[in-house]
Image 1 (cartoon, each protein chain N blue to C red):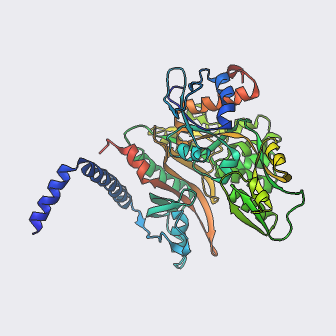
Image 2: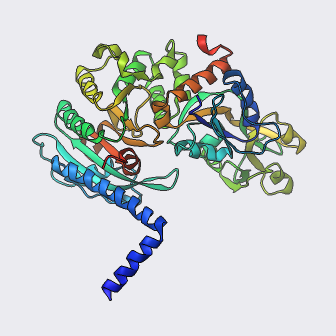
Length: 283
Length: 212
């Protein structure tokens, strides 16, 4: 029976090229996912299973889900950064869509240690069919600029909220009365304009980190890039591929408190569908 | 610029946007009598996609169009975090208002007809008004006339339609105008997108692009 059915299936597939094409596409995406996960395991990352429907809500962010899980264990100061990842779709309530993702977190350790781990990962992940574009912002630098401009805490929160939701217009309008040439604050600056770390008040360790990434990607600085989540407190980055209308990777340095415990680290999300488009032709 | 595709909301915004386009880009690709909705990019002009207002942000977020032109009222009613609002074009200016058969502020439980349930809900919460929303997709002015609702929350340009139905503005909820939105990935990877934004901002200020 089985061989007969098997032959029938194979015959059917050869007669329906659309189905074969669809299966091949799924296979390619699955292979890419397996390669991503194998690469993370090879680099010493531990998988953390998270619930896509935890706390009676759909999972919109792995970071909170991972930390919520880790928080249930007794705390002990880790000897170096803890490297973990979680896989599975995240939910976008505005479009009611699920997007397949892999989320990577480097928790604890010194900022230099965790930056170095993520740098290694980004150098690996940027090896696509074309040169990607890395856009970097810094929440701490922006906060410093807004404080220096004399904005009150509530105004700073409003600017940050506008930028998180992609609204540059109202964020710029709030600054217009306080900062001369405020529109220039949110202009994208190519890495070629960075003569030294002092050019835009970057920390030397951030400057060195970005300079290494220029070997595999184009880099731009954009202070309006503050990420989607309110817990980012340092560097924030997004990776884009030419002609791919979605981000490949989004992440940043964060500090967040859940329960009585505070977590700091750096993490990012790989959007598998967009990343697969970027990777096409490499395998 | 020929690598660029612009999605524009049909109706009032499309008509007013033509002035900005002709002042900054030049050639307007839509023939006067055309009902065509898609104009591919050419040597003279970026591509143009004409769609319903509430679909513009989706088309831009998915990368089908690089930039879009849509009213702020629509962006607030159907928020799409995957687009960047990059310029206020200051065209098609209007207001979202609450209006009724008199100018009194709503008291007690009231029924309000609207095509903006999100904006209306947030307004009711903010002012702690016990309102029941009736969701309609158009001809809202009829609701008080027919006794369906005592108030409406709708968009107003000159206020003439309200007047013609014996309705009065109670309060302005938000001012709206056309905004230029961009796909974040294309905003950073296609130099034409930021150039298009800069051209639109310059023409809006009445300054030539070279000196802006």
